[in-house]
Image 1 (cartoon, rainbow, N blue to C red):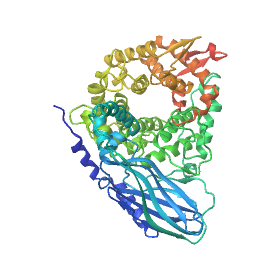
Image 2: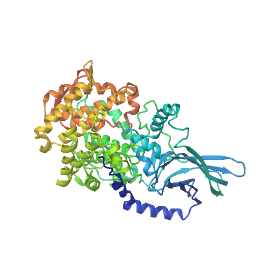
Image 3: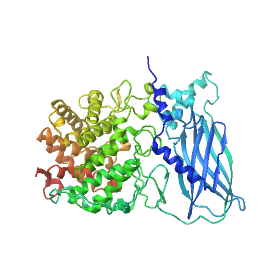
Image 4: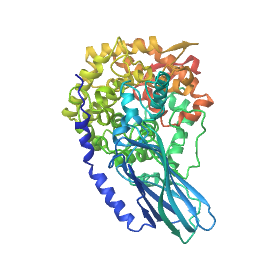
Length: 605
């Protein structure tokens, strides 16, 4: 009989971290001087709006207190939530969009979108003087029936997808009169009067570089760290075809951009046709941006010894270290990509692993210490040897998913690497337990599915192998002398080359993305190639010199891809910090010889 463990795990939501308590007190103090504060409410929905004086601009804090139940909400969701300001003197209207889609706590596990935050969200806006009527508009929906419908599919998520399947399933039943026309989940538009904002002076000056949701995050700027002492390093030698020289302009483009910006101007969701946005007036930094830039810039510093590069890497490290919320289920913690909660185990693992690269610059383990608690105290699944994933926390675990191998491996490898640097046996043991009892048994002749069952997903499979390669590249005898682990890595690498790679004109490419030809893009091929370059490097060093030849072919393909205009645009995107993978060659004793990429050879120093 299936067991629902979600009710137990959800109780952790009732306790909050000290950071949340501290920031709530900050907000309470700020709100004392509000220009406008209101609590527009109706059945199954209550929100708070608070407008503060921010100098040349105004700042709006907003939060939802009831969405089908007290925060963090119940089965309801709200679409297209926005504030409408109407000036009495001339009926001029100003719209302030708040969110496209927010789901209550119980509905979120299926509906996804946003989830009620534990702290008020905020942003800045301009407004002219006058008397403004404030109203709140949106569309409310009870999503319980849709959630129960999606449960039957085991792996159906997101409102738009669920609604499509629901309508398709209902159509033939209507024809046979098995159901009525009644909509079990109707959309209910609402407009709630919130009060009047009297503004005596114009706040319409253009502003730049303002931070969204400042209660949730602490921004760190280059100026804050530019005077920090720089650790001494020994630069590895390089030849003209080594990445540090051959790709120097591209490598430094991200460096120069990172000095100026606190966000990634490139699209983070694989829409490569979108040009970068360098004109944002407000920014929100997420961990995908921060850790990818850190993983790119830390190896660049080790390869060049450039103090400016170190300080840029330090900026991203400080942002991560000051904003990490180690407890699961904190909502607006930094998390995987632009999501708020889903994937926070993955994000904590990915960040921890990336921080280890930074810590190895000067060999000082203090850099990883802030992440130890979050990795060590993260709750384990009650019946499976893996960490609790956010899907488990928010949904009916047995009807939802049982933990993806890619997320789990990121978390486990971070545990081991942080434990290795801190000499923490408990953390290393946790990482090994998860790997040996959950991740490794999921292998099928060198291939891992997305999660247990028939769920192929080759890009996640390749990321998992890339994570395992990081264990070898530590040089620790625990992995380099483990015959079973080395044999598994050989099977895994051979399977990647056999199943996913494509050789053409002496180059090896990994062109496809999630089995979808429409999603294939040279930038995806570059990301896959750079990850597998590091896997092949580890295999050449610790398993078999024969992997040097495919490593050379992968590097040739990467050099060609990196020069394509469409890859240049997203080279700097936060998913595509390929610097570390490429610079790992020289850092592990390999140099590129030859007169041009088509003739390159990798040789040991």
